[in-house]
Image (cartoon, rainbow, N blue to C red; front, top):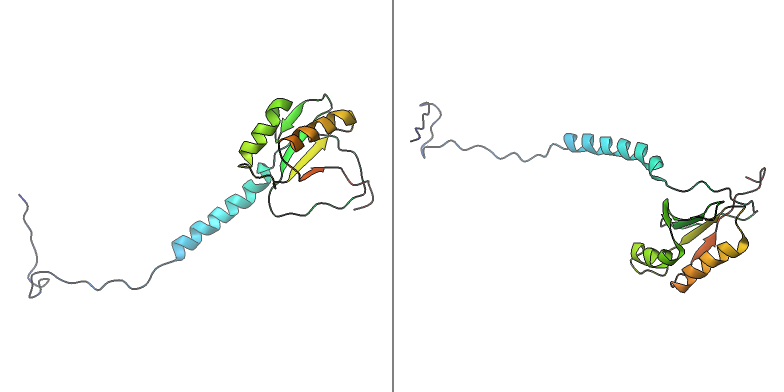
Length: 148
């Protein structure tokens, strides 16, 4: 059983006191949270770049420009194949990239071939990517020293 006790000065004619609604929104806590998130993402973004250490050949070519993050396929000096930083076989490569790109043949794919890998191995990987329906495939290289 509940009992309601009210002081005599607080009661209005209808029995309850009406409060005015707050018409202003305090955005300070929201701005504080957004600034903290901004700092967290600024610190975390460089840590999210993944890849396999590959000794790229040098070439005097301009960098490719684009808005979206490309998919990176790497071949290390031992001839192992990697999708981003995951070890993968040549047979799994095409279907896995189709799944990652949500069947978008316009996705950019960068192929990192180690300097010591045979040219035929790199072409086999590019052929598998082309057979899976991808046409925006680029070979990556380092700029020669002194040209930056």
